[in-house]
Image (cartoon, rainbow, N blue to C red):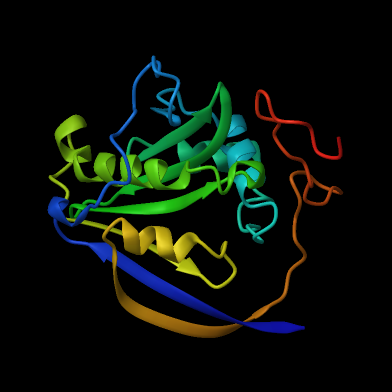
Length: 211
């Protein structure tokens, strides 16, 4: 069976295009306890990257990297032009953004998303804001890379329902739309043989689900 998939390509062409959700929190700690902690994974790890990819994409049909070997994952994420930025909620990875710098001064946000249990908790806006800000200053931070001239990404109708709104709120502009027929694939789940987990996170002072 095939499905119709719409893909939207979005871009920013100036650092001034970014409309941040909240002040960035790419620090070693968040002393006030508010908002997600967002840090770069400075030691590339195929294992950690696969965990993030499989966990974020478990219910939105991210499958293109699931069959990669460890060596292929290493080649994908351990290159100098790739950065992984991770959002943590009280010490637990909640989502991530993978950036890839091109030789022409463009930086692509290759992957972006939140683990299902952390969606709707005010993390996506700050994470995207930080990822875009770090894409714009990548050439300043990293020796051997040109100044960033453009930040771009694509999303599609298989992604979460709030993805496009988040991108537009952060200042991205639509520049191309494509529609194609694709083979329908099963929702992969967080690991082989498992389906998406209907778990919830209990907040301090809030009754657990079902209580």
